[in-house]
Image (cartoon, rainbow, N blue to C red; front, side):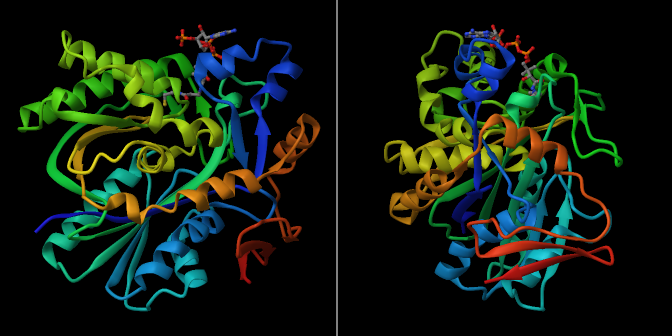
Length: 384
Ligand code: COA
């Protein structure tokens, strides 16, 4: 029996802000953003969008295609949680009308946790192959205005159905793991923006990649030269280039497997959406599936990283016919439909983001599910 990703779908916030606009107001060369960090735009949420509404928008096409039968577990990975106690997936369970017979939880470890969620899903399906697990990665990546991370903000969600005999990607059993207790990026409970030691976080990311790769190989993982492509966590897409170069240096110094041209198809969505934290690496996968050549039967590597810090390297093989499962036009349509906002509106929305007490939100989202506001400390969602 093979187990893996049976279906995958994504959504982003309905607003878009161009990094050319940010560079112009900062009085710097836009080349720093376009080439230096590899980002052109960032998706931002409207007042009535959050991690739950984006998750619902990402998951809906999967449920429409496959139904809800057999989905007894929903694991929601996020580092921009909306409640300290209640899992975001319970809100999602409600708005999607999922079966009552379900275990529904949220998991956290910075940008890494969707990978843990997938591993949990693989374990559940291994024990009971009739079950399917809905994994959601959804985040709003926010940094302070005028901080080094500001240009790497973004928002988005990826939903994946983990099942036996998957139609998209068979996930192989070997993983390479790495954890170290460090302060490269974190978000204390009283803040809605992350604190980050940017340069240090790049360094820890690369150390984690090396450590996870060595553990992957020590546990019988495949050779680097056997990977057709590697999808890396992309806090900004240029990070994937740094990662590929580092891995090639230690894993295949004389070969061509580390050719950075092989990354091109994996960065298209992230360059336009920005950092989506937990969703970022799976947006890289979706970008490859949608925009790359047909790689059926080929092995794809994955390096998942979450600051703090945890890294995992694993691999999967693309299933023949996977291209026919893709909804390429739909995600590209969502990207085109985003409403562009200018610098002043971007700044205003950033400052107005942290609202407390009871309030109602303006009706702005292009999605079917909206965050309607807060009443008596309760978050309210509406479907239409
Ligand atoms: N044209 C082309 N490239 C340019 C440029 C220009 N006009 N101006 C600068 N650059 C390049 C720099 O040379 C640098 O390249 P390098 O990384 O290969 O050295 C890159 O653009 C970034 O410039 P830098 O001055 O290092 O940017 P910064 O100090 O503003 O910070 C980060 C970059 C990544 C540290 C910052 O965006 C950040 O803190 N991000 C959030 C944390 C994060 O994403 N961490 C990643 C691990 S999780």
